Image (cartoon, rainbow, N blue to C red; front, side, top):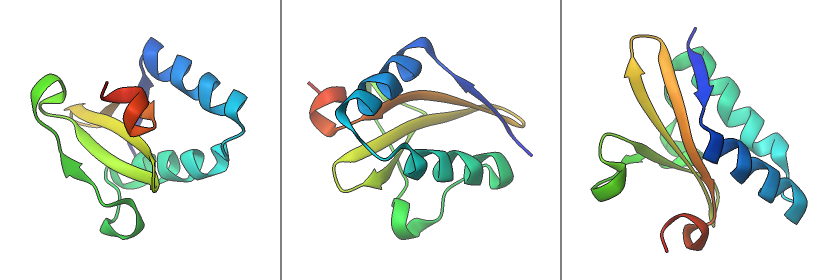
Length: 91
């Protein structure tokens, strides 16, 4: 089991997505997998490492234009950094 630690920006991102009407159940399913396994499967999430501002982080696709950025920081601890569309996160 892994512990998830959402950042303040992540919580704000989730509120924004909820206000837009996104299906947060998709995000909760991904979070459940992270809690259980510490990673997300290649299908359908396509996780891959990031560079630049998000070095050491992993980008996973919740939906075609909806991503989750997370980082494994300690043994058993995953920090949820950001979630949203590509334009929300990579301006």
